[in-house]
Length: 185
Image (cartoon, rainbow, N blue to C red; front, top):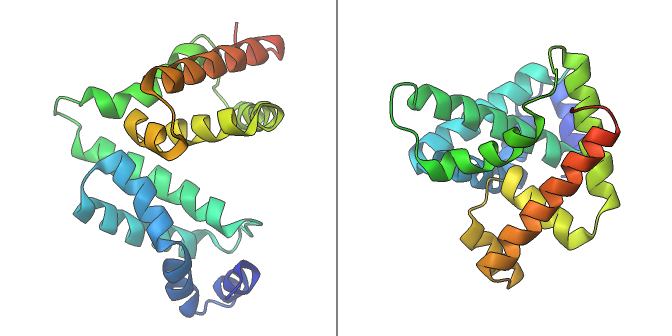
């Protein structure tokens, strides 16, 4: 079943939309959740929460790209669950590292309103669209999917130092771009 039909089923409040979404994008959402949570049981619960969030948000939302929409919901749900699970525990550095790498760049900015966050998101998307496809894919794998460096190395056949350098240079280029556009100081 194609995505537009699935979205239409959500609008009709047809529960088969959930089954079709899970069948088509369940593995993708689990992959994202696993990279954040590193616990299969929590990831499976996160998938169910993702589908519930989709059910509750479609309508009024009408996603043009259902895969991306569900991936975003899975990522947000997984991060929320991770925060809940780790409120008073020591946080493993492997989980925080991707967030820290990006946070360093924007920590000086003023992102108080949702509008500013949306504008920032759109600007990051424009930047990513303007760079080499391999660099963009590596960046997205690390900072959207939370892939470990070793996984990225295997996927693209690169050495660890090449991936680390590519990510650093892309972050630096993004920081310069955001500074030029007035998003960070």
